[in-house]
Length: 258
Image (cartoon, rainbow, N blue to C red; front, side):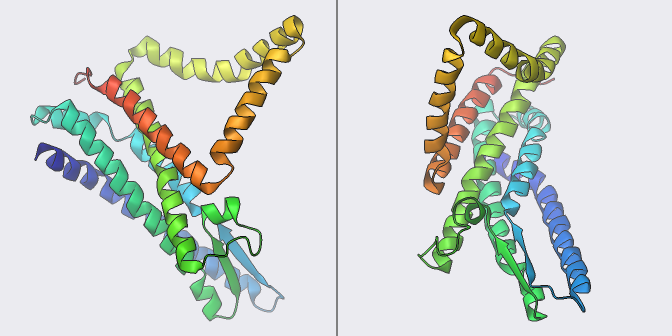
């Protein structure tokens, strides 16, 4: 029962943000279509297209997950809800939120072009999966309903990975002290922009670039498998979510209220 109570509380905490996000998104679509119709008056305009709104939704889910730990964690412990129950409720919240938003994204993708088409202007709209994998004409032969179903499922796993990453980062920074936050916050950009180029120069000096070449080749094969097909991408996102959630639990299980 405590898991369910925590789940309801965490889901309610996300509800207003999700409604605001889709309100802004739909407002943007309405404004875009009005401007597009106005621009098309008297002009030879064949049409336009919008692609992959799930990519934008993933950014929202990531940011929402960054903001979803501290207050919920403190409220749960103060009301006698264990860390385990809070974490399980978080997993359920992430799953429910991502499922609802993946379906909503697909509905927006389907419905967004309709007003323009009613006015005789062809406007296309493609999901993120279509844009990444099936943009070529005739690449999908299984029918529109199955395409939308698979697109929603693909979006769900993409959003799960974004949610897992955001929650891992926020639990990590919650556990770190002030010095640790500075080191991690500054250390990652320094490593990316200065450390990796320095390692590349060192490898060029020692082994004529053989190590970097071997590592790059290995990751190229991994990424080709992980993101070469939509089902592989979905599975990869699920594995990443599970791994990041496991790390989040290890950080959370001994956390104290601050």
